[in-house]
Amino acid sequence: MSRVLSQQSSVLPLNIEPEPGALPVDSSAARKVQSASVLQEASTLEVFRSPVSSGGGSPVVGPRCGPMTGAPNDFDFAVGGAFPPRPTGNVREQMKQGALTVAQSEAAAASLVMGSGAVVDTYARGHLRLLDPSPPLTGAPTSLTDYTSVLPGVAPEVVWDYLVRNPGPVFEAAGIRLQPATGSLVDGAKVFLEEKGPPPVWAPVTFRLEPGKSTVHITTLDGHPLRGTNRFVFEDDGAGGTRLRQYSAFQGSSPATSVGMKLMDPIERQHDIWRSVHAHLHDTLASR
Image (tube, rainbow, N blue to C red; front, top):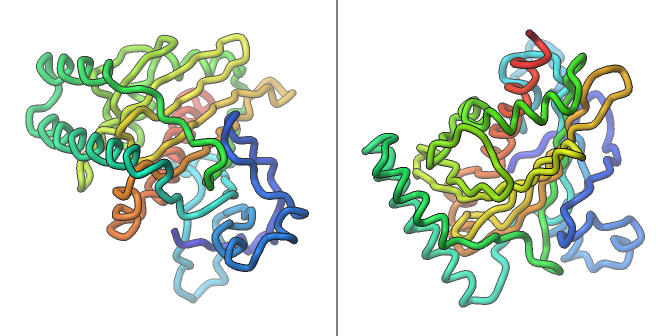
């Protein structure tokens, strides 16, 4: 993943809070005693912002920050932990995950040809029942990202309710289709996040809802290219609006992760997805 530090500020600390069980961002004390080789593997915490153009020169190529529509939702993110994500688990587990990834990619290709319909939905539901959660493995190097944006004038419970009741439009804003088609989320719901690629991908996830805390948890399932969790926390900003914090923790699930890193930039695509999701929530709720 190409990285460009903000020209507006130097490296800033950001309190990345991973899901329980994921490795925390290394403390400064721990980094002092690590070997040089380990230091090269773990990234320092960096806040990415849109570079300020000095005019006349070529634009800086790097992570693209800010909502795709240009709406002022203050979208930003920071990274920590170990980058790029590497495959975790023993050989047997990695082979299992890799085989499921391939099978689900073939199903995604068939889905794109056939389109949405009862046949695809039935197959997706049957396959999802066979998949177990695949969160990051405790103790293994973990990649962390903290995404943040704001929705002025919109209460946290309103944003939470909209996401739960409209998952299809929310993810479609990022070019992702839910399989099977899902009108609203329920606690424990399992779906494939379908990307047309190339290559086409069916990335299975499950949702856990905490309405009392205005929080939505997303955990990957077997066969997802990444072992990971995303926790969306809708916080009161103290002025009648919402501050959205999204804590992401992930690892590679199989050798397919490393292959994907060489062929494309899946981490940059991940940033694009969440940038679009944050922008959709802002543009739909805060702008109306």
